[in-house]
Length: 100
Image (cartoon, rainbow, N blue to C red; front, side, top):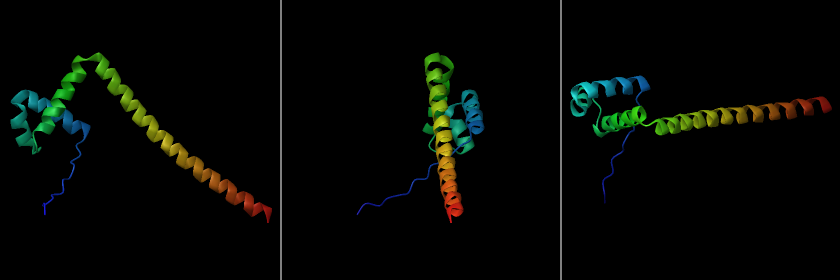
């Protein structure tokens, strides 16, 4: 039987990522990852590559901005759908109450 290990995904704030990228540019990715306790250091390397791509490629930057906007709009739409469902239920409830 194979032993499985549970991996947990760390979540880092955008501010932390920005500071980590700057530190990696100053002292190197491996040292920065060790200093910040980011394991594996490939995570920090990916952040640095992404940052470089955003800085250098305007089409990529626009695409990422569009993705971000779509994500935000989907979240807003989901919220609006929930509100609409609640209002429909409330309307039905109060309409039934008045018919008696």
